[in-house]
Length: 169
Image (cartoon, rainbow, N blue to C red; front, side, top):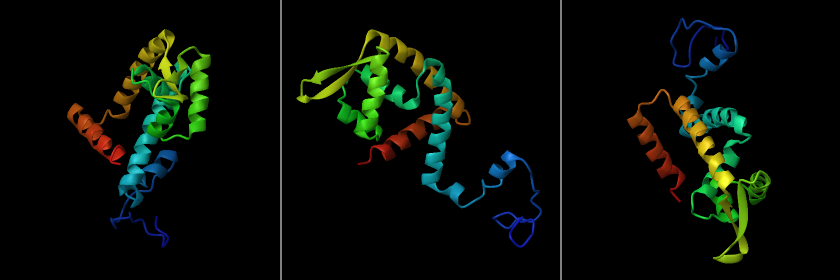
């Protein structure tokens, strides 16, 4: 219902039935102006995907952020902690905490960066590589669920568009 008490949706369609319950509250907002804004949709999609991945990664005692650090440590690119912070858009102190957690598990190790001895690179251990292989499968399954409404071609198009936006600096 609108503030005037009529049963009209945002686009003016009369006769929209009123639903009750938590899902009804969400569905009635799908026609809001906000639900058409790109920044909101990107943030919501990220939230939905991260929540699902975090739930599934919990069995491995990981979250999306620690998985991301582990993934980059396993990449062979030898990222520095500073590069991790910048690439993942996290505060350096957050990276330190994530690396500390993974290091305590024996999944990664810090090494002096040959490019800059004042800096550390993060590399995966053998145990970290095994953990990453398990976690990558979990994340792929979570992604399949989150993107289930999209065809394989649409998923690739979405990934391509997101890369252009994410790395447009």
